[in-house]
Length: 304
Image (cartoon, rainbow, N blue to C red; front, side):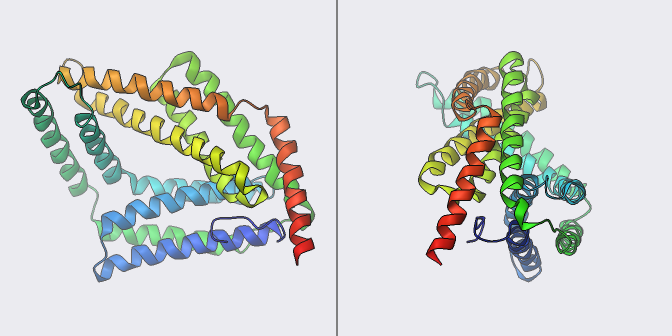
């Protein structure tokens, strides 16, 4: 079932299965870099797997709070070590996407004159960051150690099967509630970090919807799509916010003006979708997930 929870199985055992698969794949990807694999691609993919692991552990945190605190911190700190090069690349990608979405009234020459020097600056800063990180090999080795430690700790994750439904539904509802709270703040302030926090919680919610998709695949698919669209829009918006800080006030005015226009579009789309996705109150969400979990488990047992 890959990154899917089987409602007929004990939840703690299924979490160990899913997490073990993600960890093993991540270690294999990193290990392949020593025999010709592309380290940039491996690091990018492994960062995604670490986010999925954190989302998985967050979903079941009420089953074993100590395990969640320990492994969430371990994976969070490990992912930070992988962030710098990827974050620099994201800024370049954001600039490139902006350059491909300019008003027709702007000439190609004007766009090139505005974007090319800044792109070269960003490339140079990425090279400097890469040189200062102490080497990709050491970074990969440290990440493998982190993942292996998580793999070992995973064997200790246990909670009664009778709690599976309550653990899953309360974990989902808690993430939904955190996203709703973040939405209220982001709507009020419009601040870059507040929008980024909203994006983070919606991203977790999207992973939860993927994990619990077997409860009702047809209903969860559009919700997952909405969560993904919000994460993409607000993620790009945050890239632009970071890029704005990199540029500094008064520098590259055309690029800044185009960013203003694009960020307004991204934030508008993201907030509209977030209001729809998060319209339901957490208590109602928890009850609905619990009922769907029970029905899905009964259906699975009946079909055996």
